[in-house]
Image (tube, rainbow, N blue to C red):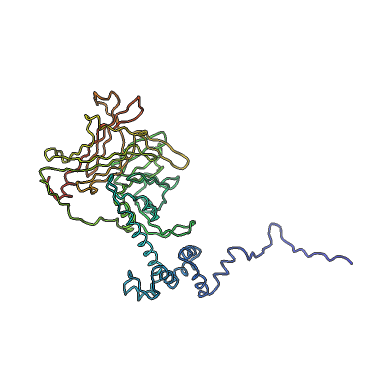
Length: 461
């Protein structure tokens, strides 16, 4: 008996026979989405908060279903209400009555309550004040435990805005460096209209492939068109030129071009946690007003009992960290609108302080990196007689060679670092020791503006 021939379907050239793959993710999702909403809600009720947030990114349908008030009410009650019928203390009567009408209300309330609980826990850790710096000693760990990060919003002249994620950050004793870099992320230097820096407080969910939910706090809004006019070139190497546009902000420009290589912010630790999370997307955090401290010493005596903590560092390592106490200035010494506080006297050799490492600023942008000489970052904290932060600075500074310096103690090159803003000035003199191959800080003087002192103490110097 002749064997039966197999029937082979004819396929036109260039085409592949279609076959439904019932196991593909797309077909499975389509099948699930065709289920009645009641069944989908029942399925989603088995997920926790992290699972609901993750599945809300699948499609518009799942975003709507995963915001259901009944689901989030159950999660909220399970996590924050000891008794199921207990009314949350943070919800007023009006919102409680509208819980069925306000879509996503319980989802919003859950995230708000989680954030509040995290903040209350971390506030207790912020409490201990360092006797060296006068600042909370656990600022870095609190920021990390709160999952705080920073974002930069760049506005073009055309009005187009783009929000950039942080490229890298580096913490130091009293400051943190934030950097945004990458080819094609920035418009031309001259085309940047506004820079807005946000602190972003994210909920610590277990969804590594997604951005965790969070809220933004405006920390700085800078008009670049105005800052361009007063920009100062503080250093350069073969590839980039560093422009200081604002205290704490430098922009690296590719040499021979107008394109931006990187944007670098330095932030002082003073009130950094509050500034990063307690502002809104429209307004920055505002410190509460406090009464001026009571000074029972004759105002003719001037300023006394001040403490200075200063750190010099680059983007990689610390160059110097020093503390100076019992700084003072008599009223007769006040001149040129400034109150002078001398931390290191040039004629007192015992106060001269050597620096560790080179006075250079390292930068990294994608596969390129470089070093700009005679630049570093200064983080200064001046405490008043009551050990409260009075003037806090964290900003890149440049070192310039002094042509006419004469010294009988050091027969070597002299350099000057001069920082200035509306609140005061800082002058530092350094010498290069050729045999030791290191810089020595031989003079450090802080000048505080009289207007700042009068406003703080309600005086009339």
